[in-house]
Amino acid sequence: MHYYQFNIGDYKAATGHLSNEEDLAYRRLLDMYYDSEQKIPLDTQWVARRIRVEASVVRDVLNDMFEKHEDGWFHARCKDVIAAYHAMAEKNRANGRLGGRKKNPVGIPVASDTQPIAKATINYKPETINHKPNNTVAPPNGVTDSVWQDWLSLRKAKRAAVTQTAIDGIEREAKKAGVSLQAALETCCARGWTGFKAEWLKDKGEQKSFAEKDYDFKRARWEAMTGRTSDQEFTPLLEIEDDTAH
Image (spheres, rainbow, N blue to C red):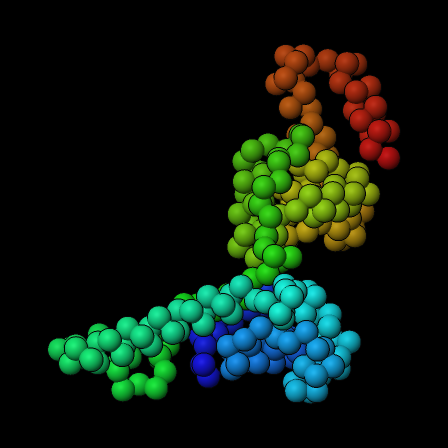
């Protein structure tokens, strides 16, 4: 096949981690896969010469974005697109043998077409096993459900995977800023940040205000859980929590 539908947004989301040279190699590898309708050969040197990219780069991209089989480098999405292409072509040929349709719906190729047009294939989504987002991370302790759901929605809108590594990184930065993970995630939601860095709080005044809001949140949560309001009981608990965090 010499045509496949290209979805810019899906491609950018799946390849944002690639360097410029790796991105070039990946695009040319996809073209080779679709053009030959075969898996990418295992002879990396041969492939590199054909797509005119350094063999080391080709090797890294194949390991990252494809799945190695005994007979070549496999890409599940390419297989699905090729299968859909041939299914549509066969349907068109069958319609042609029956005399064709009385009226050709918009976007459906007729039997005389040498290849399907844009509507004939499904959107191209170059997903790989290694880069499918994992949204099964459990809500961290101390984070309210509303804030957690808001943060999940933000990550989804920004096409950022929800992983335990991401949560751990935000929590480390929150500790550097002297605030809770709850407060850090609230700030991410308010400012459209997928991540959080202590240094992003512009000045000491802002950090102080941020810490005060965090204190109010912790105090309100403690009072709701215990039914107590004494400063003498709450302050020591907060100090123990801060010592543990650092």
